[in-house]
Amino acid sequence: MRIDIRSATLFSAALAFAAPVRAEAIPLFAQRYHLRCETCHSVLPELNAFGNAFRDRGYRLPLPKHGTTGVAIRYQLEYERDPAAGSRHFTQAGVLLSNADIGAITAFVHYNLGAGGGPAGLFLGYLVTYNAHTQSLYRGGLFELPLAQSPGQRLDDLAPYGYYATRVGLDDLTLAAPRWGVQAERSFGTWRADATIAFADYNGSAYGGRPVLTGETSSAGAPELGFFLRDSLTPDIDVGGEALAGVRSITPVGRETFRDAYDRYGLFTHARFQRLDFQAEQWWGRDDNADGIGTPITSSGGYVRFKYYPVPHAYLGIRYDAAAAPFASRDFVYYAAVQILDARFLVQEVRPQGEGPHLGAALTVGFPPPLKL
Image 1 (tube, rainbow, N blue to C red):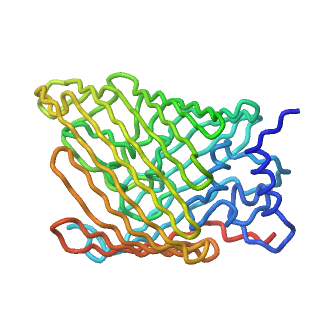
Image 2: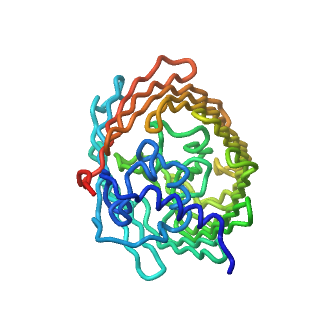
């Protein structure tokens, strides 16, 4: 009989965390499998290694299932010491999370409830299935690209990473935008490969917010193709690369529609050593006609991040972000977070190049309250 080593490891870890002790669990998956919240999260909503492995297997575990809350809400209260003009110091936001198993298929929904008076809307919504025999995952619907860092759902701070939110000319499609399409993933030993085909995209934030009027409309002019490759050199060191190519159809106000062919390429590395965590990523891009007059525009950017975990559910972080499209922007992000029960307390300071510091903080809480098991 063939034994899947990774599935066996996941099963063993699940059994260890599911031991009959008094535990606090947040809704959905924790209640379904009678796990503690720290099983999957380091500091919520950030996932630890077990949480990422659980997600990579279509949110399934080889354990008995129990009755579970079908809907959960993640609420966030954010503070900015120096808010933008017309904005408040305190803003509220939230997302509704839901999940259901339908045979071998899992349905997942991440619906933002609006922020700052902005509209609510679907941020993520997809069907996913995992084949343990072939170590293959298939996802269809509205999903995040399988990047080195989750751009909108499992953020460890309040600032977008490096190149992830960069626009190039009139091309408003960023790496952080979820895509409508399909994703296929396959593991080969220590290698993991992902292929994506996107036919449309979502423009907005994970928590909603007031829409930004840019004066143009854009959509996919041709399906976007993506390929992502990751290798675990050791249990604590990962390296990988990414490539995207597509075409945007852009219509500026009062001008004819034009097409812009673009491509994006990236490299990353991630290393862990006891309580230290290091991650770095660099992207390069080219748009053939992002200004509508035939001018090719190159772009680049990335980040370097160091994190220290004094205890398993708290961290101190420093990150250097940079982007150029073609004008350069750089900043340092200093932040700290701790999880107490099902709440995260986060403080951060962003220091853009040539500007003063911007101090912010956030309280993120999951509802319903913890369930005693």
